[in-house]
Image 1 (cartoon, rainbow, N blue to C red):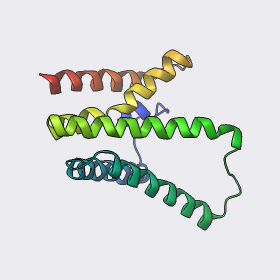
Image 2 (spheres, rainbow, N blue to C red; image 1 turned 60 degrees about the vertical axis):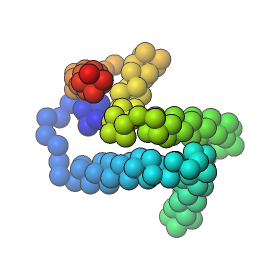
Image 3 (spheres, helix red, strand yellow; image 1 turned 90 degrees about the vertical axis):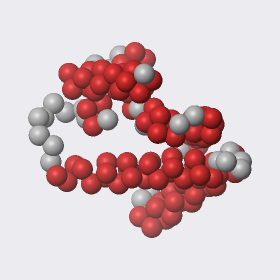
Image 4 (cartoon, rainbow, N blue to C red; image 1 turned 180 degrees about the horizontal axis):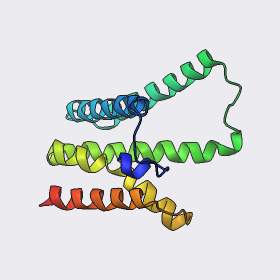
Length: 148
């Protein structure tokens, strides 16, 4: 995923660049395992609780940092659409984890940066760097290896 999301062509990764990705990866992993455990009884309630918690965390960060930059109301429909799509993706993950193997569902759902990079390439005509191209190929190879 680092190959996909990194935009610069620098060959070396600095130690300080690893902190936030490691915390994010740990958070995603815990969320995916947590959704698998609580989704046995119901799917929508844990997802609603996760969405409420993320909105509460966002409001807390905005309040504590006191940044004046708040999203414009004109962007509200797009933000709501992004939240609905995220919740739908999490619901599909929870369903996949219920009927299939958690390891396969978790690994496949973690490949979303490849879709983002490919959409940016085809829709926005952004150029893929050589490193991102290698990352896309590695992600596609991982899907093939997981499926077999």
